[in-house]
Length: 393
Image 1 (cartoon, one colour):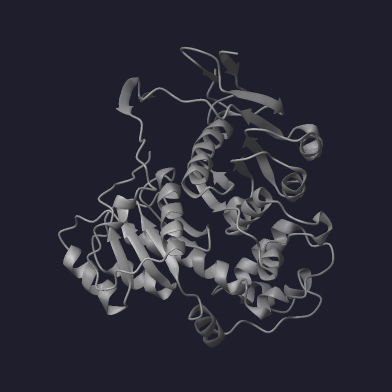
Image 2 (image 1 turned 180 degrees about the vertical axis):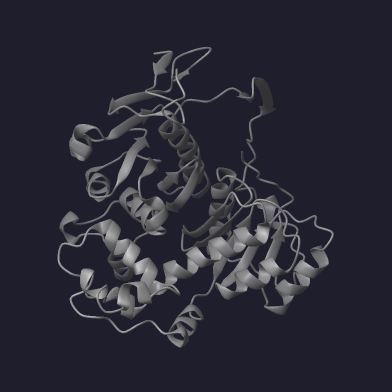
């Protein structure tokens, strides 16, 4: 098949719409549903991300995409009981495959942003992964293969309209890519840089030059995630998964704050008070996630004041105090941070430190590199200058 007609483009008024190949066949096959223009943008960007993560780490990978940026990305490391709890992994699924673990991590890191996402899987979508996908609000999934059991589960989702796309894992695009804007065609070489190269860790200007293997792995995950995130962007990673992604901000410090706030929320969700919130039976997943988000934040009274808490809880929970929040956040350590371009000022490091960042990978090359290095040394943070910019638009 050389082309596929779509319902419409980015918006319903943008017609006609299609995807097509100028040469050869489309590398995708729609197994179920009717994916749209934005669905395919998410699917194809997300597929590149997970494929590259798998190549770099040797582990199955997953991504949760929204509006052509990842809300989450992860590799298939086992889940602790705490992570299973905050990611709402049901015991009924049984033993999780590595691919299922990767998906649970990618989806669970920022559940608010992942609502209505498009999923990418690096490996075969098996039954445990499909069972995790089944109850979530999602537009579709792309993977190189699906087991029959998994496909049956997914075809029943969204009253049979759930989008399921199979992609040829051997497909290689042309080395030059093109797109149009306002009738003008842009052309550039594809960004084929190898982000698992040891050379990325050769220029370490900080006093602390120690990058353990786990930190190197997590920084590589951060950089690969940024490669497919709308710029400006930064990414916090811990234990094989993105825990905070700041995308599409004009100011880098705003990226760092946005992603840092998301990383803080991820960590606060593991606080005993949050894990034991007494939700009313049958609360919708979206309402539960939003309630947790509000309870953790400065507007907690919106779900705790009389007349409101009864909608969400069987009894009014004690608030998470500022002191408890501060003490809990201080326990989050060994977080990695990647940036898609240089940090212009040390304020980014100051903000990153508040979220437990110990390792940083950034391009370097700012006129204030000395200030950035000095700020890292202030907190004994190890930082590498990769010399690589990863803008994506």
